[in-house]
Amino acid sequence: MEQKERESWGSRIGFIMAAAGSAIGLGNIWRFPYLTGMNGGGAFIVIYLACVFFIGLSIMLAELTVGRRTHLAAVGAYKTNSKSWTFAGVLGVLSGFMIMGFYPVVGGWSMAYIVKSFTGLLSNPAAVGDAFGAFIGDPIQPLIWTVLYMLINVYIVARGVTKGIETAGKILMPMLFGLLIIIIIKGLTLPGSSAGLSFLFVPDWSVVNGNTFLAALGQAFFSLSLGMGCMITYGSYLNKQEKLPQNALIVVTMDTCAAILAGLALFPALFAFGLEPTAGPGLVFVVAPQIFAGMGGFGMIFSAFFFLALMIAALTSSVSLLEVVVAYLMDERKLSRKSAVYGTSVVMLILCVLSSLSLGVMSKATVLGVGAFDFFDILTDKIFLAIGGMLLAIFAGWFLKKEDLRDELTNGGTLKFGLFEAWYIMIKYVIPVLIGIVAFVGITSIAQ
Ligand code: PFF
Image (tube, rainbow, N blue to C red):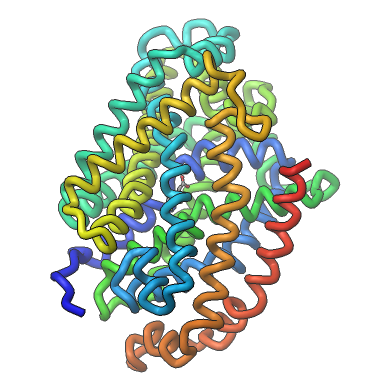
C-alpha cells in the first residue's frame, strides 16, 4: 500500500515533553489530589503507585510499541493486523471524544480562575465555595471560557506534530514544574503544614476497600493517557532509533512526580489552614483559593500561578486527546489536518456545552441517573479506558507475534531489554486478568 510521508517528532526531548504533556494534566492536578483526599491519603497513594508501575508502565510500553511498529494511529494500528480488531481502535477514538466532552470545560474553569484570582476571588474566603457553584452552574460564563480554551487547542493541533504539539510541550512542561515548585515551597513554610505531609505519606489502611483499587486503577489509566490509543498515536510518530523502554519509564516517572508535586502543593497548605481534604471535585477550585486567601498580599499571585499551572497541564493533554481523533481521521478517512481539527473540535464543543449546562440549567436531564458531565467522566475513567487497556494487552499478547514485539522493543536486536520476558507475561496473562477483575467490580458498582 502506498503511504504518504508521515509526520514525526523533531527530537527525543520533543517527544518526551509531548508525551509527558499528554500524561500530565487535569488528572494530576485536579483529580489526583481530590481522589487522594477522598480515599484516605497515603494508602491510596501506595495503591496508585502499584497500579502505575505494575500495570500502567507495561501498557504504556505496549502502546508505544504497537504505534511505532505500525506507524499508524489507534484504529489503523489495530486494523492492519486484523480487521476484526478495528472496534478496539474505534472504542479509543470514542473515548477521546467523550473525555473531550468535559475536559475543556474544566480547562475553561482554570482559565477563568487565573483572571478571577485578581478580581476578588480571594477577598471573601468563606464565599469561595458558593462562588464556584454559582460560576460552574451559570449558563453563559463557563461556556465562553470553554470556547476560548478550545480555540487554543485548535490553534496548536492545526499547526501539526512538530510545530504545534512538540513546541507547546517543550515550553509549557518546564513552566508547569517550575510553578508547582514555587507553590510547594510557600506551602511547606506555613506553620502546621507537616500534618499534610503525614496525610500524604503515612498510609492509613483502615480506609481501603474495593473501591479504592478501582479508583486507583482508573486514575492510573486516565493520568497516563492509556487505554484509548493516545500513546499508540504518539508512538506512531517516533523514529526507529528511539529506545522505547527508557522513554516509557521517563514519561511514567514524570507523570507520577507531577501528581505527587500537586499533592505537595495542596495538602500541607490545606492542613496548615485547617481545611478538609475530602472536598471532592471542587477541591482545587474551592480549597486552593481559600489557601491562597490566607497567604496575605502575595496570595493573588500564587493563586494566578496555580491556575496557570492547571491550565497549562490541561492544555498539553487536551491537545493529545484532540490529536487522537485527528490522526484517525487523517489516517483512515484521508482528511487534511486542518479539516480534521476543525470538524472534530465543533463536535467536541457541542458535547462540552451539554456537560457544562448539566451542572446548572440542565441538571434535571440525566442519563443513567447522572448529568452529561459526570456521564462522560465516569464512563471513560471507570470503564472505557480500563477496557481499552485490557483489549490492547490481549491484542499485543495474543494476536501479535512475540518475535515482532521483541524486534520492536530492542530496535531490531541492537538494544538489550532484559525484562522482555517479564513484560510479555504481564501483557499476555497478568494484566488482562487483573483489569478484567477490576473492570467487572467497577461496572457492577456503577450499575447499582
Ligand atoms: N492524562 C490526562 C490527564 O491526566 O489529565 C488525560 C488524558 C489525556 C487521558 C489523553 C487520556 C488521553 F488519551
